[in-house]
Length: 161
Ligand SMILES: C[S@@+](CC[C@H](N)C(=O)[O-])C[C@H]1O[C@@H](n2cnc3c(N)ncnc32)[C@H](O)[C@@H]1O
Image (tube, rainbow, N blue to C red; front, top):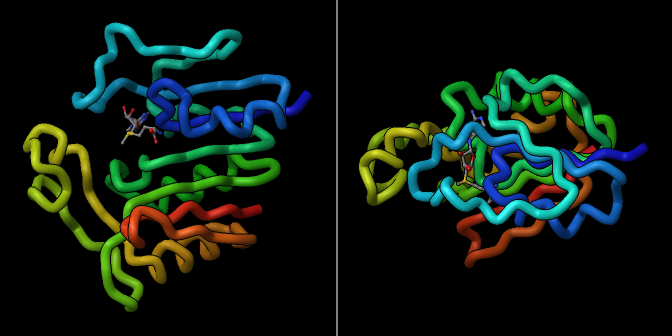
């Protein structure tokens, strides 16, 4: 039985394209993101949904998807180690990046750079440069297989095992 786990999933749209690779599809989200309408989340059929904090979720999965969540973490390194424990097969991680070539986790908490809406900006902590992200993924025990920058280089999707 193969599992696809989407962490910080909202409606699971980031993991939908991988669902056919698994038999179980699990979404985890604590509903903290106020920009979303949580009254009518368009949840896919057959999905298992856990309304809880990712750090309290401990069942490993074959395919782990984590899209635009790492910058919501107060401790992104602890978070990556948690993802390592949750990933039996591959990790697909997407995030917005900070500009620059040096490895740096830019602290943007509460700023307009994090988000123009103050309440949402107060849920965003660090945004990594690409070098910082790749270094931290490897330090957490992942091997990067491929990466794909998109959104004009503002975001990257990294495939790891
Ligand atoms: C920017 S949204 C991304 C949603 C979706 N993954 C996507 O890419 O479209 C971040 C999501 O992570 C959730 N989230 C943030 N921190 C979380 C945490 N500690 N535990 C569970 N969910 C969290 C938010 O509620 C929100 O739905």
